Image (tube, rainbow, N blue to C red; front, side):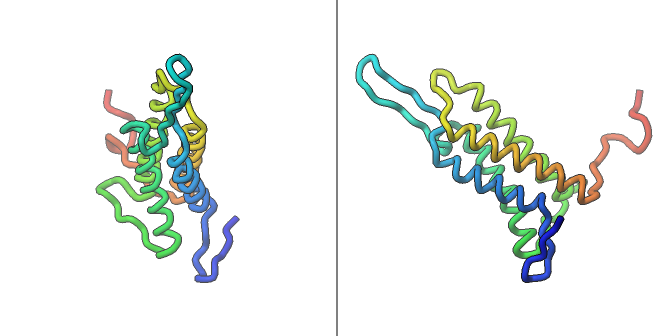
Length: 156
C-alpha cells in the first residue's frame, strides 16, 4: 500500500522502512554499544558509544546512513542513484546494508572483555530493518541482478 505525499510522488513502504531503520541506527550510534563494569580497584564503568566502539561499528553506521541517504534522495528529490556498471541502485542498497549487518554481527560477537550495551542491539535491529527493506525494494523494483555467466547453466 502506497501513500501519496503532497508532491504527487508515491511513497513505497520499503523506502519508509529504510528511513526508519537508518534513523534507528543513527539514534543507536549515540547509545552505549560496549560496557565494562569494574569493581575490583574502583567502582566505575567504561562505556563505548557506537562511534567509539571500533572500526566495524563505525563502518556499519556509515553504510546504513548511506543507504538511508539514498532512500531519502529517492523520496525527497525524486533522484535515483546511477547504476555502477552492472550494479543498479537497489542492488547497491542491498549490498551496502548486508555488509553493514555483517559488521554489526561481527562487532556483537567480538565484544570481549566488554558486555554488549543497548546500543548494539538497537543498531542490529536498525541494520536488519534496512537490509530487509532493501531486499524488498530490490524484489519490487524488477532490477536485474548481474550473473557471473551468461543465461543458462553455470559452466561445469
